[in-house]
Amino acid sequence: MKAGVDFHLAFSPEREDPGNPDSKVGTVPKLVGGLTPACLDKAMALYGRAIENLVPVSSCRVAEAAKLLENIFRSVNIALVNELKGVYDVMGIDIWEVVDAAKTKPFGFMPFYPGPGLGGHCIPIDPFYLTWKAREFDQNTRLIELAGEINTSMPQYVMTKVSEALNAHKKALNGSRVLVVGLAYKPNVDDDRESPSYALLELLNKAGADAAYHDPYVPAIGMTREHPLWAGVELVRWDQETIGGFDLVLIATAHACVDYQQLADWAPCIVDTRNAMKEIATGEGQVLKA
Image (cartoon, rainbow, N blue to C red; front, side):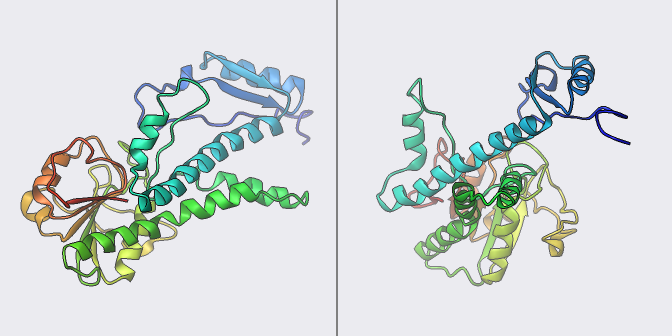
C-alpha cells in the first residue's frame, strides 16, 4: 500500500501542558500537515470535530519541524537561565529576582526559569532527533547540543550546592541523610519520565548519602529504563519526626500541595532548586538556592 494513494497520511504534533488546569486540548491551536492535499483535507475533517482552531501547513515535514522548534526553543532558553544561574550566583545575584525583573518588559522577552535539569518525554529528547537527522545533511546543531550539555549538567551543579549547604552545618555529604522532595519532572503531575530527580538520587547514593524521596503524586517508584534499582521504593511520610530526621532536604519539584512552611519548621537545612521557599519564613542560613 502506498501513502497518499491507498491510505491518507498526516502529521499533527501533540501540544499539551500537563498540570495546567487552564490548558484544554480542544482550545489549543493544532498544526496539521498532510502528505497530499487530500490527506490534509481528511485530517482537517477528523480533527475539526474536536479542535476549535486548526492550523494547516504545507507538509508533514513542516508540522514535525514546528514541533521540534517548539521544544528546542524551550530547551535552549532553559539552558540560558541555567547557565546564568551559575554565573550570577558567584556574583551574589539571585537569578530568580533577575528573571522577575526582566519579565516586566512588555515586549521582546519571555520568562524561563532555572531548575535541577530537564524532564518529561519531550524537551530532553526531541531536540536530539533533529541533531541526528541533521548529520545526514552534513549540518551541525551546535546550539542544540550545547543547551543539552548545560541542562544535563544541572544535577551535578545542584550536588555542589548540597555539599556546600551541609558543610555550612559542619556535616559531610558522605553519611548524611538527604530527602529529595518532588520526583515528578514538573509541578502538580505524576509524570516522572526523564525526571532529573532520578539523577539527583543516583548522585546522592554515589556520594555515600542515604537518599530518600517524598512526592504525593508518586507514592511508589515504578520500573524505569535507566534507574531500575529504585523500582518499588516508596515515598517517606510527611510528618515532623520523619522530615526532621534528615540532615538536608532538597526541593527538586515544587508541588503546590506541599506545605513549605512545615518544611521550614521541620527541616534543619534546605537546598531549593525551584524558589519554592521564596515567600516562606525561614531561619538564617537555613535555605540555599541551587
